[in-house]
Amino acid sequence: MKKLQVLGTGCPKCKKLAENAEQAAKELGMEYQLEKVTKIQEIMAFGVMMTPALVVDGVVKVSGKVPGADEIKKMLQ
Image 1 (cartoon, one colour):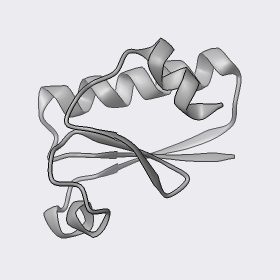
Image 2 (cartoon, one colour; image 1 turned 90 degrees about the horizontal axis):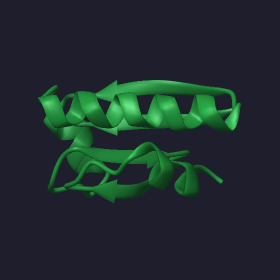
Image 3 (cartoon, rainbow, N blue to C red; image 1 turned 180 degrees about the vertical axis):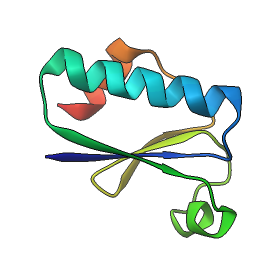
Image 4 (tube, one colour; image 1 turned 30 degrees about the vertical axis):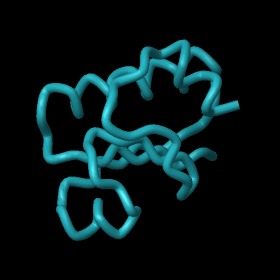
C-alpha cells in the first residue's frame, strides 16, 4: 500500500493536487492511503518550502506546483 501525503494549508491548489493524486492512484488500481498534512511544522520537516507538495512513501516527489494525474502516475510507479 502506497502512502500519499499532500502537504499544504488547504488552498485550492492543495485540494487539486489531492484530487489528482487520488485519481492517479485509482487509475493505476493501487491500494493507497491519502493524508493531508496542513501543519507548517510538519510540512517544513519534509524540507518543503513551497506548497503544495506530494510525498509518496516518505519521499517528496514534487513541490510548488500541481502536476496532472498522468504525471503523478509516473511518480507512483
